[in-house]
Amino acid sequence: MPELIDIATRVVGWAEAGEQVEAYVVHERETEIRAYEGEVESLTSAESQGVGVRVVVDGRQGYAYAGTLDETVLRETIQEARDNAAFAEADEFNGVAAADGVAPAALDLYDHDLAAFPTDAKVALAIELERATRAADPRISGIESAEYVDSIGEAAVANSEGVVASAAETGCYLSAYSLAEADGETQTGFGFSIGRGAAELDSAAAADDAAERATRLLGAVKPPTQRLTVVLDPWVTAQMLGIIGHTLTGEAVQRGRSLFADRMGEQVGVAELTLLDDATNPDAFTATIVDGEGLATRPTPLIDGGVLQGFLHNSYTGRRGATGSTGSAVRGGFKSGPGVGAHALALTPGTRTQAELIAGIDDGLLVQGVAGLHSGVNPVSGDFSTGAEGLRIRGGELAEPVREITIASTIQRLLLDIQAIGSDLEWLPMSAAGVSIVVADVTMSGA
Image 1 (spheres, helix red, strand yellow):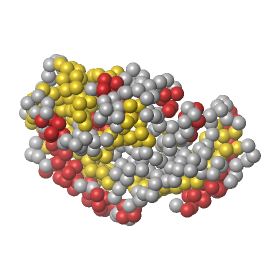
Image 2: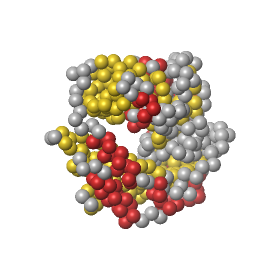
Image 3: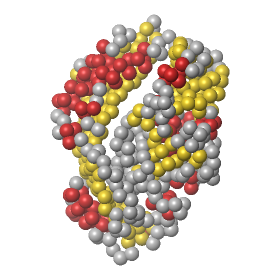
Image 4: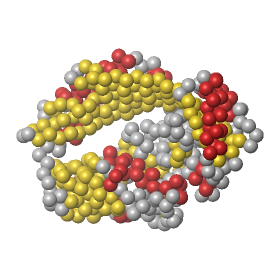
């Protein structure tokens, strides 16, 4: 890690008079193993490092990157960023992050055991996951995929405004997609297990989930269209929160692409609804102590008691909105400059399990999966319509599975029609946690 900081500060030291310079230096290793019929179907292990350099001169911003940390190339990269800035349009809000005095949280997000975890042990986990999924239920006819994935990364950021920061993180997960078959019908289901290190992974739990989700959909029927109460499974809620989180960014608001624009301080959800983005929560798979511009991450309330509290900002949108950054700069790696987005969104959970929530519903639908959600949501109007699968709820119990349905409403109505939030908060391999929520009066379109 000191080496990465040294490189970043050295590049920043090459700034010329009147320039702002930011250097983002990364070293990461990733492994992905897929098992099939007891053997390794594919194994990818990659190690990469590189630098992204941003130069801002008189409001003109240029970016360049290189996939090496060679000294000569580093000098060529800052010159290329400098050249790119010369051709850019000026924007008074361009600039690197200014130090804001917020100290990074004291978190240990790096599992040294994962860094030393041997490849043959990773292979064994993938093969065991596939075996356990096949064995979980006699109706499992095949495995679409069974894989082990990990990531071990270190990054450092420095800029000419005095920001110097670094972070090291590890993460891994197992995921299985099963195929269940009966009476000529095939259904799929998934299961997963995540951890900071391999010791936290549970292949049996992932296998059982994958088998149950597939088998319980066998015999699905196409139901009639009606409006009813739905229970969104944590996996579905997490995907929905990911979309809502995007509409809560300063970038979306400032570009007029957010349904929450001009609604600050308004009641946008039920009083029980509190939404927080908190990358300092060590339970989050995407936890991190610094953002993509080197500022400390921090808990950022977005909705509290149903009232819209604020938006997520990086330094650009923070300046443009005169609010300052919320430590919400995100990067897709050293090849791209900082954007803005959620790190770790979560609803404040309730006190009842999913089973207890279902027990209180006489006629409803448990939505366990959706398809095409991202393309089915209008971020400005809030309208959404998405393909779905799940099980009917009758008399407080799960009943027949349903297929070929769509569920439709608006995000605004969804947040205002929440009747209950479950206690089953679950962190997933994405930037939002899942939790069961009960929503009234949703249209289920079927036959």
